[in-house]
Image (cartoon, rainbow, N blue to C red; front, side):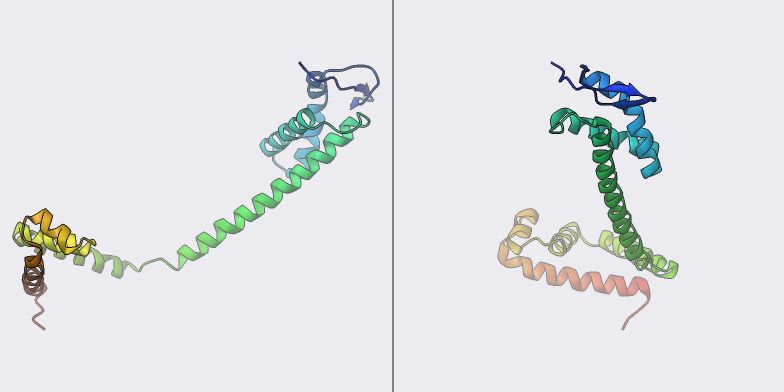
Length: 184
């Protein structure tokens, strides 16, 4: 059941009145005026409509103590909601600027990117040259697996994982240095 609110028209404006009027009538009659005022405050019609909806929701759920100057109450609630909206937008813009500014420092020079890509490609090629067991053991260890977990995956005794990893690392380094032409 719609709540009864009182309003009347005076000089083209929605004004409270002792004669009856439903919430829907108040909404229909006053919505445009509230949105117009909020567009002026916010400078954005879509934001103004959102804030106006919130103001009317407040009118419906928590109406003013008296029904006098209902349009003024809607303007006041709308203005407060608009200020909250603007503060929120300001905080959002500051957060986005901080993220943007922090990422500018993360820009990697093209030479560095090329070097990283070449290194990754070389590491992958050398790993493919290793026997499957050695390659898997190295990859598992460098992704945080324990010796016991590695032993289960490659199906060996946990005590032998250390030796397998040591041999795999030596083999990897020899092949990598040979590929890079660096014997130091």
